[in-house]
Length: 136
Image 1: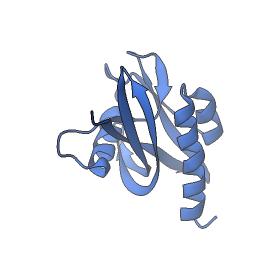
Image 2: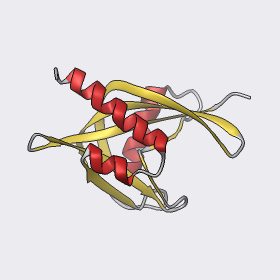
Image 3: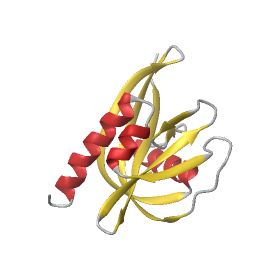
Image 4: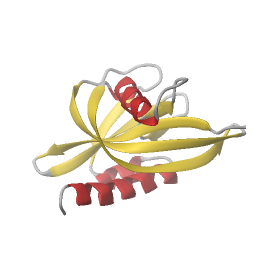
């Protein structure tokens, strides 16, 4: 059986020279995670990442470098999720049934808040990718 395909993003902004990341709370699972979701039929990973991030956070992002992918089993099925760095370019969060809270946190704060180790690994990869992209 093919794995469930999903995509998401590390949505970030620069506040006075400091990077902040968006983390979301899902009441159904009572967890803190990065915005992501399953692809629609025929949808590319990149298009799905942009759509899911906007649906869950209310913010549009510019698709940056790919950060990485994670694979895990959920409900007896393999799942693959690919993530991109996305610099926020507008929008506003509105709580909903899928995501009821969003917090902007430093990478260190985000690592502490996130529920899953796989999300922390993506934050670590993001920090390396952004440092390279920003010339650091």
